[in-house]
Amino acid sequence: MEVKRAETAGFCMGVVLALQKLDGLLAVEKGKGRIFTLGPIIHNPQVMEEYARKGVAIAESAGEIPAGATAVIRAHGVPKEVQEDLVWRGVAVVDATCPKVKKAQLLIHQQAQAGRVLLLFGEESHPEVRGLLSYAEAGAFLFDTKEKLGAVPIVPEKRYCLAAQTTQDRGVFDAIVQELSRRADCDLTVLQTICDATRQRQEEAVRIARDMEFMVVVGGYNSGNTRRLVQVVAAQRTPVLHVETAGELPLPEIGRYARVGLTAGASTPNKAIDEVHQLLATL
Image (cartoon, rainbow, N blue to C red):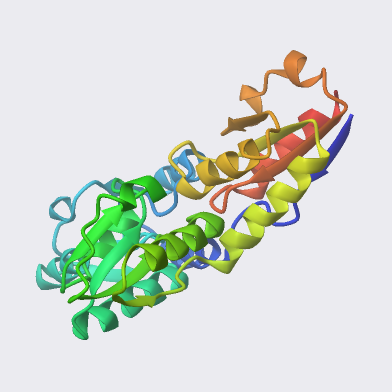
């Protein structure tokens, strides 16, 4: 069997930086104080299990983190009022928000200060999206498909800005820009907030999928960018399987294919990708 592994598979820059901050904090604290992440610092259960063994606790809400403890802000960011509340209550805050997400937050804030209403292409349940919306003081509309954009009321007299969750599909976002241009003659500023690493990862996945008979995507089931990789591969009409670990591979089924492609989400550790790759190579 030929196995083609994507060069872009694995941790992105934002994930690497976030984990470096958490590792540095663990090295300094050495058990002296309690360390919490507000939600999982990245969307990978296996990585979070490793940090749990090192004493890092996951808090589902800011209120769970006591004064005097340390809170690490996840790579996806948090709503600004949550971070302000932590500081006000005497929690030490280490901000590990991905620089790309932080840039998107600041761009949205600047546009809100100018009175622009935010049109945000993203997933309602995703933590990054909740953070981005908190910076839209002039108002916001959220939609997760091009079709749902049709239900958003566009008033010509108002000013708008359009942005996307950093891990969204750039092709779909470009189509949304065109749709808005056709729909209404309004004052619209388009913010380029989709991460280049996400775009490159998706483009490489598409190229590989077109040459392969089957694709495997490795990453957390709760990872938005990993699910998006599955979607862009499926759009090429290439059979695709999303797994978190090598143990989930249905080897007899995959063994029927001669050419298999392999890629992974931005929060997937190399260890998990290597294990899948090595198992596929034995077929």
